Length: 415
Image (cartoon, rainbow, N blue to C red; front, top):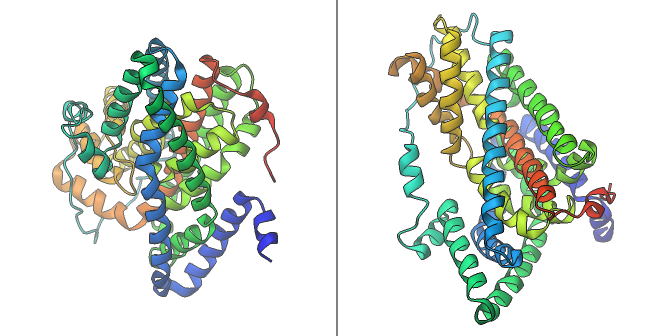
């Protein structure tokens, strides 16, 4: 029986766990919360490896470049395409919100105001990239600070040459070690996914989406359009004609885990694994582009915040001009960069965008209170978009930097 279990492709086991989890949660109701400890254990296992994995794989990747100047080229291309895809996401979200009118006729009566959390200014976000104490940054899981310090270590090892080889060898071995641990953790993913989904379905229920069916449908369509059209174009046009079907087939394990965890950071170990093993992205790019993407590339968040902002304006009868949409697009692009890669973080950042269209704090609080009960299912959808976008951009950058193995990409993934 055990051998039969491991013969089944991992994505099938995870997908089966998702379906069974939804059924169990819907039938068991609030009682399914008793399974939450299994999901919590799975999340702790993943979070256990995130920081050390990012740290050692990034240093190993930088050292593998052999030339520090290559890092600048890679970084510039990565940031440019991340910002472009985020802008495309918010444009799709705003367009669909205008067409579908999800806020028309919505009644906020009875909605309890939600707490509004202050957004982190972009200037403060940039300052915090530089850690005062690198060890504290590692302990706190501050990914941007960890990335910055790891880059400094990697570049310094390159510049000191042969003297740094012993440390570089340790980092290469440590990278292999962390990837092996990640593989072990992924074998328990179906059980963790089952518990996470069952708890969500039982305590919040998919039925909660019926209260905002048009809004949920707009978010779902926007997610699909962005993944298929925008990232499909990236894969076909910016990567010398690769197959989008093969790309999504190779990325599915990470996207399924993203759906269950609702966290880009928590999914990062799986994302790194499928990037190298299924998509042919070499470690030098995967270890640099993907950790950065899990922190600043929030396409799903961008389109979601845009849709909800228009939804709120429509519900309160606020007329929006073309200039308002342009301002919202710019504000959402900046806000999404500062979004924490954890479940539900974006819901409080909507305040910054809604404030650009002159909504009062009271109105914003009511919208947030209205959204919170069914935010988790929508959060799952947008996290899938975030992870798909990270892998798409990494594939394109790897191809441009000649750090891409097409044979691995074209190799049939176990079905």
